[in-house]
Image (cartoon, rainbow, N blue to C red; front, side, top):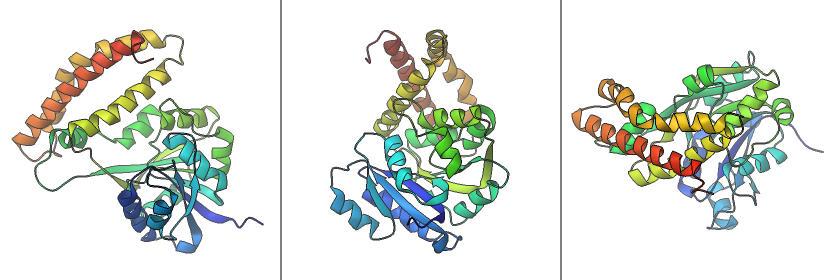
Amino acid sequence: MTIMVDVSIIIPHFSDLAGLDRCLTALAAQTVPRSRYEIVVGDNLSPCGGAMVRSAIAGRARLVFATDKGAGPARNAAAAVARGRIFAFTDADCVPEPGWLAAGLAHLDDHDVVGGAMTLLFTPGTKSGAEAYEAVFAFNNRRYVEREGFSVTANLFCRRDVYLATGPFRVGMSEDRDWCLRARALGYRLGYAQDAVVAHPARTDWRSLLVKWRRLNAELYANMMMSPAGRLRWLAATAAMPLSILVHLPRIIASPALANARERRRGAATLARLRLWRFADGLLRLMGAHA
């Protein structure tokens, strides 16, 4: 007989043992009694092997393997064996604050799906260009929830029945946006929990930032192509990228998240570089160069 628990915390993982250990340590420090929740790690067949992943987990979570690539399939595999009445999603490289779980559960009294606050972790010293850019633009989950109708899956709560009715996370698109929009289309209410806080490491260099945006651009393109006017909308968004440099530069200049002029110069240079890359990448996608 399956023994139910109040909450299943679901974590996708791929080849980040140090991050997974840090995440599990943070989850062990939650203010909710440990008897109320389980942790399920969905591993994407990390190259280090299952034995190394089990060693990093060290008995703090259950482990399941996902053969299909992607964080979505890893979450789905973990959810398939989860025993909780409520699902709480975070990522292996994230650090939930001690009150994260309690706050998310409290907000489920008023909503069916809840997205929490995201903060960033930075390396000591002056921020790099990638860190400065992310300090200003990354992970504004309040805006995502309240204006765009979705929450990042690094900080997402829902009841089991909501997940089952909405269906699993899908591959090849912006999975968090897609899943939340499907849930809302079914009539489920999405809310924001400012006090359910998860920290995520900022990208530290151009290469890691580019890896992130290659994935995001591919997902955004796939999502947009699902609508009848998708190609025109993508062309319009792509054409606006060079102009967006000037539009968003004041945010970097005025941001309290940047400590000095050097960080602002680095952030501005990264803003320009990234938006021009997105302009070129967007045109290539329209021409089928990424097929």
